[in-house]
Length: 309
Image (cartoon, rainbow, N blue to C red; front, side, top):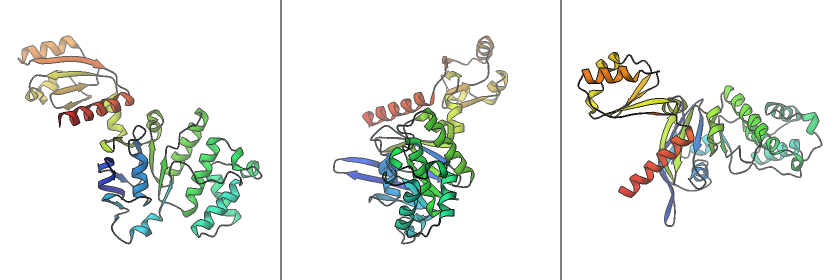
């Protein structure tokens, strides 16, 4: 099932587009990482799909169009933390849950509160009399997610959940997200911390200046960013099955007139084969690219294309 699909989703503020024709797809079971610099449009998109701001274009939640009256019913299956969780710091965790349940019009008993706290890894006995203002940031993030779970959502949206966390907080929140995902909850997580998203997401969308530059599975992204030898041919037609077989390649991909090889390769063999086949090369280069490198590369390419246009 498709959980979220956007169609040219846009948001304009006077002279600039905070979102510019964004088309993204999140399937059931995804942990989708939404990556972009500050001001890229991540929070704007989250506010648009949760109905907090108006937008152009459209989107579907659980197959229902944003233009349909049924969208309000589908939004009940969604919970979100936008910028920061709605936590009253002068209250205990239990009091915060009761307050949030009241705001939702949901009846909640002590057993359900205990269940929610246990699910997010907060020890009810240890925090029974502790005010939220005395929680660590990681504990507050856990409490915020507990508040999200009150309405039994199928889709949770988290806006920069790793911001300000120390390494142990990263691990706590990461493990909690993975645990909830294993129970059937789909996630959209916006962040600029690529290293953490790499540990939990199965798909990412790269956003910059309101535009979705690329949407890619983590599996494919890892293939593109691991160590490789890039062989650039003068003619695209020169890359064929006969050449691949003679070069004895097993792990490779073809992109335009570039052949990316992930096997250990014998340069002498490559040169002998290409000379015998009368094939000319542009270049042979080796590289090892991080996910951050890849993101900045496609950002630069997008900026260059804008200048040309």
